[in-house]
Image 1 (cartoon, rainbow, N blue to C red):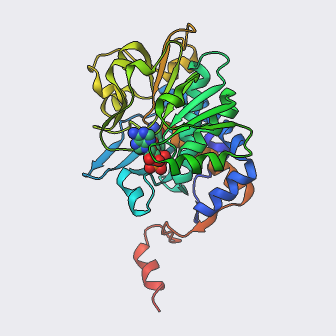
Image 2: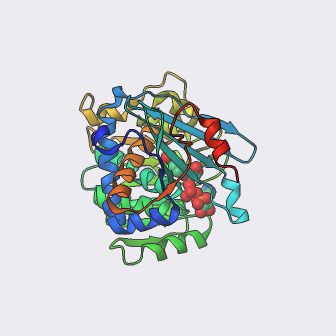
Image 3: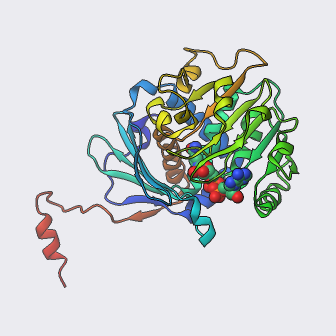
Length: 352
Ligand code: NAD
């Protein structure tokens, strides 16, 4: 997608994609098509990785969770996401993860899109996981275990169905109500859905294991003896300092693939390893500079934490779709005096 083709340099009113617009947009495109489109958009941007300004996201930690800012730019377009991660929220009826994001024109600094990103984060995270698995999962993988059946889980299942060819998901959550919800939401999706009563049962016969749990601690969702040769692990829930899902011994047996090492070393499963433990950057697999899976017996691990370029790609996609469909509102969020230096005059003229 060309930056100039889709980003007007200056808009008096800023398009705003609300939650309601986003849901209409997803239904207009189709959930699975949108997941596939997002995977392709992210891959295109990962292939031009070196054009982006990159920085580990900026966190504000509290005992309950974290609020993060995730900025990036390709020199033409700037984007950032505001996102939180508060596993305790669920107990009081709130989401663990909420988000919104913005795109701006680098040449004027004017914002050109404000969008909800709670829904979009679930879509882009699933798209990124599925994209990584497209390069790393064993050939012919059909069955995926999904441990943690919360807000992200159905998106993950559908992303893997569409992008990787998964036809069976084996679900497990410490809360059976979450598994029941996930199974009900996936009814009619075309996936064979098997609800399990333990993580051990869920991983039986699975070529791909997705862990997508939420707890602000060093958890052990998978122990070393649970992971056999040839498996691809998509570890999504360990994404903050002191918040991991896998036993360290699994990491030592795996070939580990990451988004942006300076961020993943702080936030990912690999925070458990020495800072020089070898990892492969996914963008290099996508460009062909290095290989993904090379044998049917190696254990591949995508240590997902979520990186700003994925949100940038997702926002660019939504921007184009919103303009195409008209699914947005106009926000009066940038003061725009006729004479640029007469900001005060504009204020005075607005009186009474
Ligand atoms: P959620 O709170 O809606 O769901 C989490 C589920 O995990 C809950 O149903 C909970 O019962 C279950 N769970 C907790 N401990 C478990 C255990 N030991 N075994 C099995 N299940 C367990 O959260 P969500 O929005 O689905 O997010 C899940 C995780 O993914 C969070 O940790 C979040 O921070 C992370 N996340 C990562 C990315 C990324 O890009 N890597 C993006 C979004 C969310």
